[in-house]
Image 1: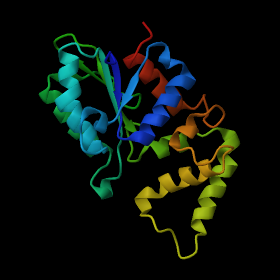
Image 2 (image 1 turned 60 degrees about the vertical axis):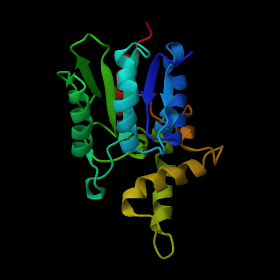
Image 3 (image 1 turned 135 degrees about the vertical axis):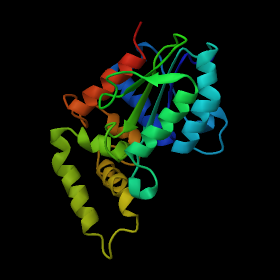
Length: 223
């Protein structure tokens, strides 16, 4: 039986993170299938691939009732790398507008909601990290870090600064390197990005964490 609720993400690491985040928050009361572009038959997992399968696969499925609720969560990325919040928002909005959707009033920092004149359930969109700035999922993690993890994260950043000869990665990937280093020093290293959703690593009272949780439960209500 196909899933009735779909959260579309960019790739496998994002899938693992959101699946564990849903479990942590108890959102699985109303099961959500976290899907990547490859799940819909695309050749690769990227943001643009996610936009493609949203338009060509999941919007038609939402329209004909194969799925009931749909959301997409992708990175805003960096303006200097051809992405950025404004470009990502505009690309997504353009595709949804062509499909008959309109941006709900009040959408923004707390997540985007798009309504449809045919009475379909609102479609949700979250642009990492915070629906306003350039960045990615790893930036969201750092925004919502548990206070008890601050010293270890700072040590991870300092360690990267001290790499002999400088880092090999591009500056735009700095946040990924910081979070990966921080996770490598946890009790269960080498388990991927999903480990950040383990209890005690994120601050449940952080405003951006609460905003994502509220948005997710708005798009996928328990009943």
